[in-house]
Image 1 (tube, rainbow, N blue to C red):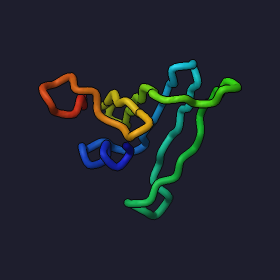
Image 2: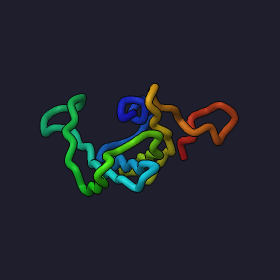
Image 3: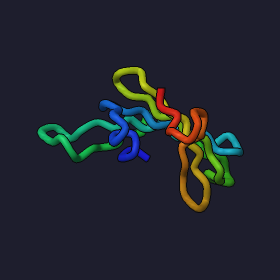
Image 4: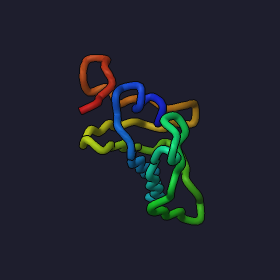
Length: 92
C-alpha cells in the first residue's frame, strides 16, 4: 500500500491508519531512513486491539506531507483503492 502511494506521488512522511470491523485501530508514521531515498522506517503512533484481534476487512486512510489522501480497503485476499473516480485511484 505504501509503495502504491509513493508511486502516485505521495511525499513522506506518510501516515497510515487502519480501522477494522471490530473497532481495532492501527496508526503508523512512515519516514525515510536518514540518508536513504528508498528505505523507510515505520513508527506506531497509536494502536488498539480488542481480544479478538484485527479482523478484516479494514478501511485504511493514507495521508502525506502535502495533505494528499487516499482511502483503501484491506481484505483477506489483498487490498484495493476505493473507486471513487471512474476507475482511477481515489487520490486527492
